[in-house]
Length: 88
Image (tube, rainbow, N blue to C red; front, side):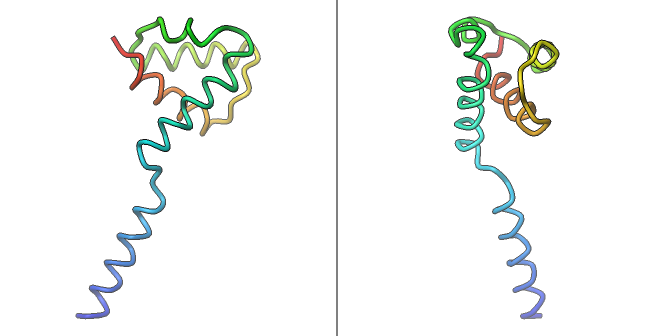
């Protein structure tokens, strides 16, 4: 019984450490916006928009097709950040 409890506790802890805390995800999203998007247009342009997650997904995909360099993981982080921060 004691071993099972320790195993469950260790498993729970490892699952928590694998998840990115919301504040870190927000910081990473903001950094990606500044680093990868502001080279072509000011961040104020993005900040003036209010879009749904689906619309942000389409916008980021369009920017990648135009040359923005984002990995799949970075794209997800950026779309999540934009969706949470600049929503209708």
